Length: 621
Picture 1 (cartoon, rainbow, N blue to C red):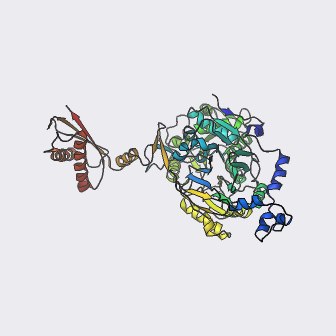
Picture 2 (cartoon, rainbow, N blue to C red):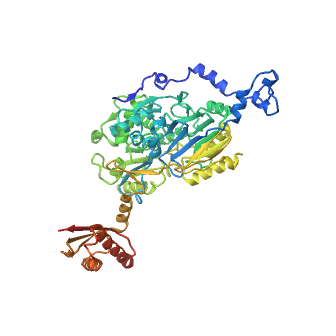
Picture 3 (tube, rainbow, N blue to C red):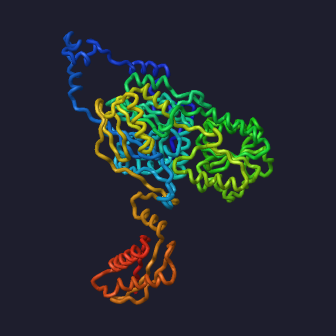
């Protein structure tokens, strides 16, 4: 069965029955944005005073009274990632027998405490157990921290569960699914303004600005009220492509009444406003003009299509050929060109193999590696391990990105290595060659003021970010009891008049190693890896026959500080003492291993204050 993936111009038809035409949509919004007037003509308002206007006319209002006396079922907001951390964003909304999933991201591991791990995705046990309730997966945009976990999610959901997103978002997601050989998914393209019905939920996609095209916020209508989720956003009134954030629609939603606002918090510590992407274009232009005779290499996020377009346009202006380097760069450029998000004149792109045929001033290399990733093209260039490009003194290298928290050491290591090879390096602290895709404090204030939510939950950030965002909301007049700071595994229960924590769900992390094998973060595998990386490993081999040890123990050390013949002799003595007098007839192989391991553990602690991994093999002959 092939992937149902429509990228045609008939987007509205492909997007799960869009609600209305543009004209009809405007009319519908006017209806929903009207608030009940505080007058006797309104049955609900009048009822509080005594008799309603309907009762005065002799009409029955049994339905109104029944709705107010019936106990309300809460909407559950389930946090599976993206709170208390940067990355692997994932939230689910549940009402009765319906669940919708918002984003499925990943994050990259800290190599110090996750050796051998390539990526980290959310633990989706709860969703897998309730997969028959899942109505859809909704993607806000195409960054790794929002779509990187989709393949692992879809492996455990029903194959007919639809995935919704804008053109570029789904194109990038489909690339990831194909890498995992998942081809039987249902993908439905949407655009800003589309509204889709998903069981008890109705979801509207709202245009916002971010560092990737096709980013959307979501207005989620539930039986208890409207939830507005910001996705990742900033306010850019002069975007290099696309439309500015849809303030008009956001203001209309605020008038309609927002029950819960969930907003990203990545840049909440930064005052003021985020700079426009046009600033980067101006900086890049003067860097091109100042390096007319030098070879240019620009490292940037492959997903930032708007910046790639600016770079391509400048290459054309200054008559440079463009060579791409890096697997993700090729994939994103190919996807963006196919759907018309990126326009490259014919003859501008060349194969990187042909770089040697051009003068330095005629060439621009656009590369991955802006975060210092170990296997990226730029890192390999800096290490002298990239056979297609050799860095020299006539190279100007522009790193057009900010360090993601935790990546600083890797990036500066790359910069140092580039300098050692004689290159001139331009990075964020020297020039305005990167702007964030996330809102700063003043932008957040604008959104809070437009939406006027009853309740608020800050998301997408470490605890300090969430706390600062909660404080900002309070400074704008929101009551402290109407704000919740959540953690992974929390379930928040939401009614028309209340917000509170419910019973936690199983959540956490799944670790993906180089072979694509999933593993839980609390497993013995990770504990053993950490032990080996810190204190090394000792192996003990022992042969027994019946009630007797028939060979001297063999002890070997790997990655340990304390080694040598004297140490190994001492260890053999410890093992021999541990097994002296041991009754093999009453015991078994596992018990012998335990006795030896315990004796060695006590020895190492007293001798070295370390706890290496100890592997004991007992062979019966």
